[in-house]
Image (tube, rainbow, N blue to C red; front, side, top):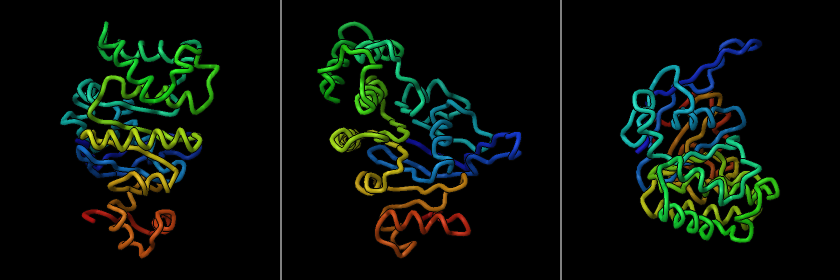
Length: 251
């Protein structure tokens, strides 16, 4: 459902000149599959996700999301995805219920269907106790649950999640993990980035490691173990960052 083909994005920086944030990256993610994108800060993960969500336009290359081209048919892409970004704002003066109502209407959900979906999200992400409390009074974990709920309120077939468990305590992170696994079981296509190696190893069917804008390797845990000779994902990750050339095509 996601097909990325030599996707690239460059920026012009006054001090550094041309910065290749993403450098001809290719991979695919199928329906009913979880693909994890790993990399150090500044590796290009968020740039990649924003390109796929049509927030940014690529410098070159392309991608198909749900059969729609991210450049030629961005509106079709947006209708099929739920996109979570860490800097989308928390709407501090609204309550979680009001946030969900707002995003539901943006996605064309109204009336009793919207009310039902909001109630489902409140139950699913367990924020009944603060569903009518203003967002600026909530903890980081509470805000993140609301952010994910608004991302999936319209039940999109494709989820693009940028560090969904960042800053969360163990119980809340576990709730998010259960949601992601259930979404996979329902046939959704899930692409997410994370810095938590244990989370990626537990959740992902396949993993891609990005460094300096390039895809260093991608594959299942067993394929990555065979490639590097390492067992733990943390060791695999560190080993791949030291590799002189990008590898991984066809593994």
